[in-house]
Length: 254
Length: 366
Image (cartoon, rainbow over all chains, first blue to last red; front, side, top):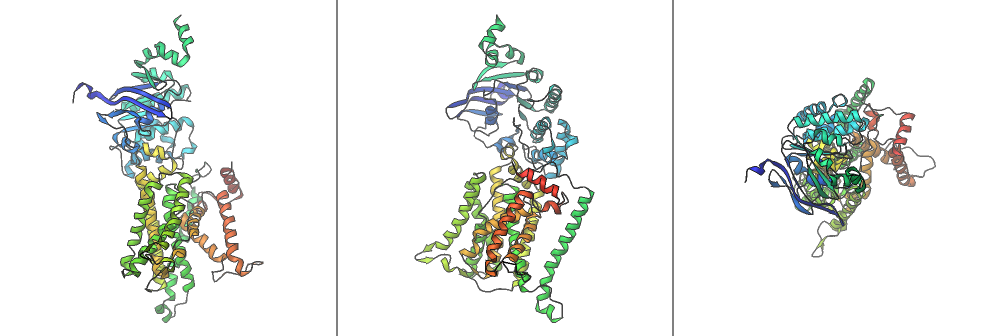
């Protein structure tokens, strides 16, 4: 095996996913280094969530390949991908409604990656640590139905972190949060990253992309439109066009 | 079938709630010990030394039936209550268990205690076989498919012929040699019920149980968190089947005669689900409480209980019909007003009041 590409933790090659006649993803290729924070942006319907669904095994690919540390993982069921150390959150939160906050987080530690998979007693300890990390420790005993939306998003992150992932896929965990809450969530992402987890995050809040991401990729109609340093990507004419239309892009230049 | 969301008005039990829970546990334990020991007074030895008769044969025959339904309701709870898959065909496992034991005793001349362990094994094997395809279905689709399977198994067993001879006794059924006395089967059935509760107790505390509840609450989220959903669902189904099959195996020898009608009755499907729901689906003791309450009610309404008084304006031969009507009304009332089952009152979580019923109505209606 050649040494230089060994730094690619996750590698996508020509990933294609069709729903009926629509190609939600059309030949998307990119890779992600161990320990980086990669942002994925793009207008609504660009295929961002579909991309996460493909990586986490929720969807099967129609073409292309996904490699994890050099090994193909496409076609594996979600629980196998989770056990490799790929955790994720859902844009529309999916808490286990009858459980407490603590139990929700403990499920992540009871299952999750091969490093997690703890027996119940240790899983609950791990849950407490993770809830501390995301700032939900005080609400551990509450039923999840008592949580506010920002707290439910934190819980999504807590559950995913409890699985001890090497790579964490965050799907719009800051959407709908106010200014202060976004700052808190940014702190949370940095804290998780500091524990050595690679992070791929989908976000519409550009402050987040610029604030924490080392690199960003832009999806548009299922295709990779641009890739690079976040500030530069956001100045890219094609990206501005995709978001705000051609006329706005011309005005900015003129 | 998903358990209703635990809403914000059910809080953790407070001090008085904990006291009530303790009182109910003590009463429950006392009733259980009495029910366990009372039949002993009917034995010849006890009668010879002049112990007063606390339970005659009729009573502990009814107690055996209650224990049998406790097994079925509690086993259904594992797949229906904990995993959230509304299995409507679990009676198939009861029947398969009964026929496995029945065939081994009647045709292969095995002794009962050698034939009994085969019942849960056969039922679990069958559940695994049909579970892999069926448990890919969700919601109503799974309910209907499992109901169809439950009906089909009974028909197949009755009608399979080999060279013109029915393989499983056909419509005549199977006759088993008489072994032991009623009291033996009472203790066996109670033993099966205790085993079912013990298994559920273990499941609720284990990784397996948390996985099942995660599947019930959100299958997709459970999968991406590392729960092997297919393996878990099939295991839960097989576990429920094994326990139900065990009850069937005991029933076969107790009843001495089995046929399609008495080991594949479709109403058992409905009754075991109702017992779990009335008592409290997804809880440890809910299905047991439901089995005791509902079976006593069924027996009372149909006039089988020795204490059954005449019901005014209802002729004796109309009582089974009345039982059906009252059961139907009860189901509606429980589903609408006590969605979490009566265990909600025993557990010290809530107290029965007008306010409780009003809040439940709000919760269950659109």
